[in-house]
Length: 476
Image 1 (cartoon, rainbow, N blue to C red):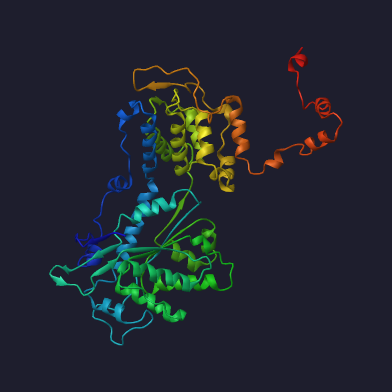
Image 2 (image 1 turned 60 degrees about the horizontal axis):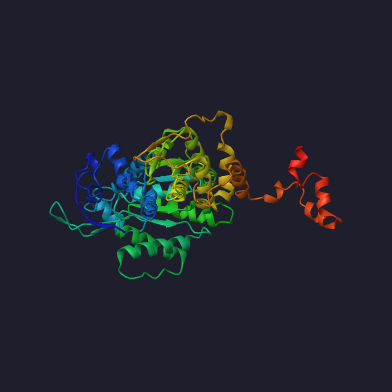
C-alpha cells in the first residue's frame, strides 16, 4: 500500500478546478510518458558476459523476469481509469453542500430542501477487462493501478481546512466463489480497515445493515474506484446469488457514484451480455479484451527483441526467424512463459563450452520451464492453433553467431546431459513428454502382454516386425 501527502495540480477542465480529490491525483502526462513509466529494462552489464565464472553469469538471468515491455493496451486502460476516477470525484467536491448531502444521507434518501449546489447526482461508470488466463491481465492491471497511490492524505487546500482528510483512491478485491453479497462486503470492509488502520470493524449481522455499513465506509473515505478481480466466478448458475451481487454492485455505481473495474477470464463477457443493464454498466467507461500476442504482431517483435538482448552467455546468438518462431510456439505468445524458456535456455548452456542458443536448446528449456503449463488444455489448444508449417520456415542463417569476445566457438560436445544427445529425436520426445493422453498414442497397448504369453517372446516379436536384434543381417 502506498500513501502520499497531497500535492495539487490545477485541473485542465474548469468544472474540475477547486476539487481537491481531483487535483491531488497525478498530473496528466503524455502517452509516451505513460509507456515509459510502465516499462522496465533491466541493466545488461555486458561485461558480465565475459566473466569466466558460469555461476555468476547464470545468476544474472534472474533479471529476465524484471523485463516490462508495455503493450498499447496499457495506455488505453490507464486513460480509462484516469478518466473514471476524475468523473467519479467530480460530483464529490468536499467544499460543496451537495457533498454534505452525499455524506449525511443514505444513498436512497434526499433532504427536503435542495442544497444550494443541487442534489447529489452520481457520476460513475464501469470498466471491464477480459482475457484468457496467462495473457498478462493481472500484471498489467497491477502496474496501471500502482501508478496511482492507494491513499492520499490532505490537510489544507488553498488555505481551506479539510474536514475529511483521507482519500482512498482505489482498492482491489476478488469476486467471491459463491457470488455472495456478504462475502464481498466483508472483503471490502476488511480491505478498507487495513488501509485506515483504526481497528477491525465488526460486520453487521444482516445484509441490509452490512451494505449500509459498507456505504458509509466508502463515503467517508472518498473511495475513488473499486476493482473486482476474478469476475468469471459470476456465472449466473446459482439461483438468485449472482443477481443479488450484480444488484449490489449496481447500487455502488448508481447511488454512490463509485466507478467499478471488472477483471475476468471468459466467459464473463457472455455473462454480462445476458442483460442489457449489466452490459451497459460494465462497459460504459471502457471494455477491453486482452489476447495472446500473434507471431507477426508488432507487439511480439518489440518484446522478443528486448528479451533476446538480455543474455549473459559468452556469445551472442542472432535471433533468426527459426528461433523466433520456436520460442513463440513453445510459449504460445505468453510473455511470462517466453521469459522462463529463455531464462532456462541460458542456464542450460552457460558453462557448457558451447553457449549458443539453438532450437534444440529452447525446446529442452521449455521442458523444465513449462513442466506444468505446457500440459494444460488451454496451452495445448493454443499450440495447435498457432503451430506453423515447417516448410514455410526460413532455415537459412539459423546458426549465425556474433561473438562478443575474441574467442572462437568450441566444437566440443556440451557436457550437459539435460540437452538432447540425439537432435533428430528431440522434437518427437518433446511432443511425447508434453502429451496428456499418452495412452491414445499407443497403437497396440497389449503387445507386451501377448509376447509374455508366447513360448518364445523374442521370436514372436521378430515375426511381427517389432524386434530387430541383427540389423546388419536384415540389411544384407
